[in-house]
Length: 433
Image (cartoon, rainbow, N blue to C red; front, side):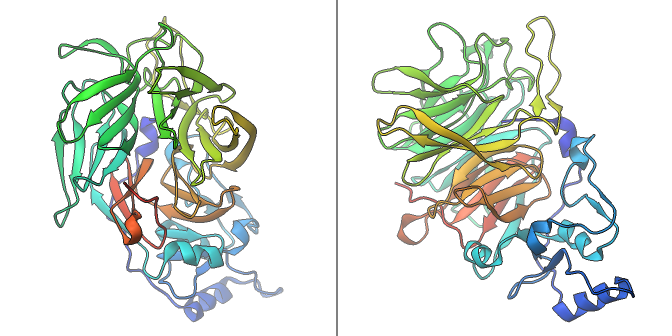
């Protein structure tokens, strides 16, 4: 989880999915702007066969060559977006800002998008960070959280009605500031960044918590490392043995939901709920954040959001994270050792196109999806960008939702600052139990 307030200063509006145009019209526009003395340069942004344009836009050669002068502003986070790049020589580029999907590999992209991809803006929510989306198949609901000081309920989307409705639900005892969540065997397993010694009669510490959905009762799974407070337990995934792999970073205090300064270094851990043993498995990332296994669980993906710089001194009240585009904003892949206890062969596979890679999930087919700024990047397992979903709000985390053919989840929901969106396309999530 990473919150930078100025990054979400853009106005939220309903995403349009009805724009269309033809190749001849686009070609005539480009010819009108083509230099008289040379051949026409292929448009950076062009229609994809079989889809409305610019709803779905194909990017020529990954946009790797921009002719003439161009500029992408990086001083202010909300201006540092790919569609906001100033491109003077190619009038096709303005279509990027009006797209719902950018396609970098048309052949693979078609498999991901399906025949009629759509992005639906579902709910307008406050301009604060929302996190920890998780689908509960037992009740056909989507849970997610609001990370703001003193807010204790969970937000719940009822997916059994049309249109879906949004309400609040309070656990007993409350769970404060969850930033990551997974569903397992009737319970939601939460990673929390909230810490407070006395909040509405409760004491909270960052850690791992379980919520029994049927009863509404919660319990603590892990809240310390041999007496040290965790800093901000941000996200998690669960392996086939039931071990919980989670990240611990420094964002809870700058985000206003943790009163305790850091006591230990940031890191990624493996927790065995059967024995209570917790072990550090990775300590080289600047700010470890999202975590997800590949379908065969031989690979673990971690995100580093170090471009959101924080002050950890106990002597000052830290401001919100400060944006520094030159710092880490990277997705890493690791091999999981045969014992299932260690991470090997660290390698970077993707540098975020916008902002930082926050929440991360993997499709049933093995594609890697990560929330990055005003959208979601869809990558191959080795990090090659295939599709980017564009949204009108900052996406912080994502979750597979619904039960489709063969029990696979068929929709992707995105939550963040000022909005909740639903993506319906050809890509499928893992089978839910």
